[in-house]
Image (cartoon, rainbow, N blue to C red; front, side, top):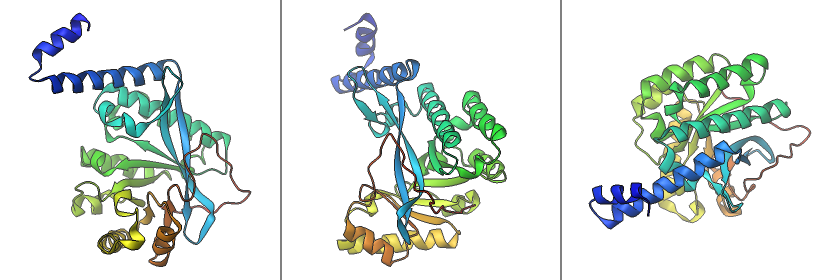
Length: 276
């Protein structure tokens, strides 16, 4: 243990505090190094419309980092640790850069890219977001920015103004993980999200779960009321897909339709969600 670690341990109240702090620091260092040496990747998962499930409506770009051993690590395994640090903003920047590059390379692609509300005030991220659409005028219409429910609530007024500005230029916004947090319906009304992505905890096994069936009907009703496309996350079986289709869910996403992949194979003509 280094002198810094010893000093940190002395200030902690318990061995568990020390272990958690060391783990978080190791995660931050790992992500920081991956960004510095170019080991940030995007994996792409299809989102399909229930009416045409064989053709993706768009893809979600999911951040990955490659560690020293060559393992590709999903963002879910480190995002909580880096979200409130600058390294989280740098990861947002790199993810945005890679996503915009993919949109430029594939003119028929529609892509959603995850972002944190905290990045709205980060100059490098904003500059990246402004530059590519200015140089490629039709790019903004194929870009979807996903903000988690919990992130949007950090600074709702700033998020609302940010969204209004970009929506006027054709960019679409999706509220991610809806139902997992504590969104106020007042805020939901003011935000004007185009797409509502319902958290997977309510979707997995829904064909046999009457409680979640009631909840999903209610969440879909909220989406319809605010004129948002609804997307079910974590669709993992034919039974769940069939049930969600039968109740009118607009779009489906999950392993049943495709695992996240480092490559994208677009059909010659793919339908797209026309939100916004």
